Length: 370
Image (cartoon, rainbow, N blue to C red; front, side, top):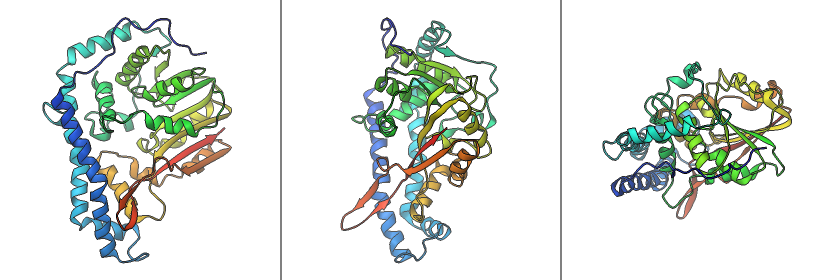
């Protein structure tokens, strides 16, 4: 059984020093994005509605896309979606990369020390692992080089996630929402399928101290940071660098495999093998569950916005993901039940005074039972 470590680490938490100017700059970017995702979407839809006429006129995807392309609010929205993210990472002096690189030596020294002292089962890295091409060459989220090429990629990724929410918000709240939806029972052994910087698995362990917690990822820099964060929380997480298509766990090993917005980052050609391997390592009646954004059925406006996000933010596999019959694939590889339901606690609408609200996003909850 997984357990809290003996004593807290002697060293303080690994932190990137952030100046007041850095924090103010990223607060501005977040406020600009809030405007983009709120009032600008409302104005865009009002103009689209005026041009398209009442439903069902001009409500197919291709027509909606052509109409929106001509509207100034959509052009501004698209520019902002692309460049606010670019400013976040790449701006000299205030960008995430510049801030992290300025502290490079000290940060690497801390990560190396934590890695060197890690018990063998708590951090298993594989320098000879052949990374899949779909992961190695795609700069997801405009993170240059992806999260495998530089020793500080995990730290940059963690800051990028945290600065997506306002400073007063809980960046781990999305994990609580997912875990609260799962069947209430004991989970003796769980696997975080794409553990990243470890925040979701740490959140799970806080909520379920009885669980033995494992996490796998392709990114060594992310796993090193996840291990460091686990030590800071006095947790024993069992982290390993593995290809999700070829896990080294035995058959029937886990009670639960969970993921957070992973499916849109996987090419459809690899999805059956990935799900087949997840099915193999689950115990009978075990659960594979997670949340993921998607297109809203029958909502051409939202579908255009959702598809545009893929092209604007280097989400190479998002558009083909929307057409992937994931439930059929799950059943084909052996899952006896494949449930896909709208994740309403994550779905939000943009309000328009005196008018119908606008659907600007869509999330689904996936639960596949072995």
